[in-house]
Length: 261
Image (cartoon, rainbow, N blue to C red; front, side, top):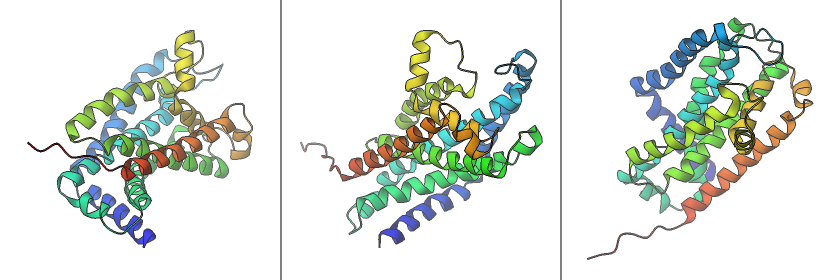
């Protein structure tokens, strides 16, 4: 019963997405254009980490993957608000299914949408000359799965209690953009001011970015042996678990209606 509910909800999310071509094109095209224009513009003046001859297009590539996963994952969960307005969620909530099944169905469906788009962009990796290995690719894909799940649970936890899609969109943009910018996605995090260094260290997306970037440049075993990468994996996994628990608790709380009269 639980598995059937999860798969049905997840499938519904994905089918709804692919049946909206403008949504597919917009959510995929914006990050790609952002990467091409910004990457090409900053490459002449960019100095890679250490003494590397990395171009900004190459450095920014994992950051754009993270951007796509973050924004697609979170904004796919906006359907929670739409489903509540249309009465669909009320019917699901009162059904004899575990609340966790509702969370997992919505989260897996939205995360699947983000991964579908991110995997399309991942096809560009060989053309950038990135030294991907088989185990490194597995680490990249595993990182992407964890990141998508983490972002989706975050969006679900916030979106469940909101009544307006425009309000959700505005709030999440203010909340998400700093998380992404201060993760090392756009610029190296070395030699930052002390106060900014503290913020980036506390930012969970920073650790997800570290994990994702590591798989592009080393086999999985070698990458996870690097300082900070294994802890980044632990922090990202803990973030996914915490987000799942928070989302399940949000669904389990019965919201009071507006007072009569």
